[in-house]
Every structure is written in C-alpha cells, then in structure tokens.
Amino acid sequence: MPRSKAMTGPRFEQTDFDLQPQPLSAIEMIHEEAVRWTHDRIVACDGGDGPAGHPRIFINTDKPEIATCNYCGIPYANEHHRKHLESLPKTSYPLS
Image 1 (cartoon, helix red, strand yellow):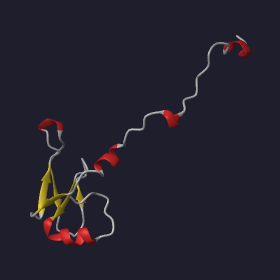
Image 2 (cartoon, helix red, strand yellow; image 1 turned 30 degrees about the vertical axis):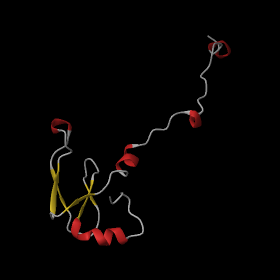
Image 3 (cartoon, helix red, strand yellow; image 1 turned 180 degrees about the vertical axis):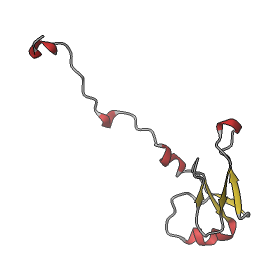
C-alpha cells in the first residue's frame, strides 16, 4: 500500500498536558509527613500495616538531623535535637 493512502483516517489527537490533572508524586507526599520525634537513640520502622509494610529496619537518631526510613521515607528525629532542628532556616519535612 502506498504511504499516501496508509494514514487517511483520524490521526492521534494531541493532548494538552496543562489541562490534565497533576496529582502529587510520592516524593512530594512524603515530604508533607511530619517528623516523628523520639527519645530513643535507635528507632525501628516496618512501614506499619503488617504484611503491607516493609522489612523492619533500625534507624539511628543520634545525629542532629532528620533521619529517614530508606523504604517508606518516614522522617524521624531525636527529641534531644529538637531545638537545633527548629533553629534551622528550612527543613525538608514539617517539624510538628
């Protein structure tokens, strides 16, 4: 079949992506999660929800910074470092 007759019907209609819904990505949603304050030096995270979670990992909160779970991204921080973290101009997670 000649190329001129191959595409005689309706063609692909272009989509205007500015008019399409733009849901938040997973990374944007996890950065809305508030920091979980703890008095323990080491916390365990298993993602919650039993079988729907992830393998249990242990997170060190000794340093004056926000520590995140490598699987689900939930932020943890030690209560001992709260003043320092609140004094910072900006953090990637809400502190309360």
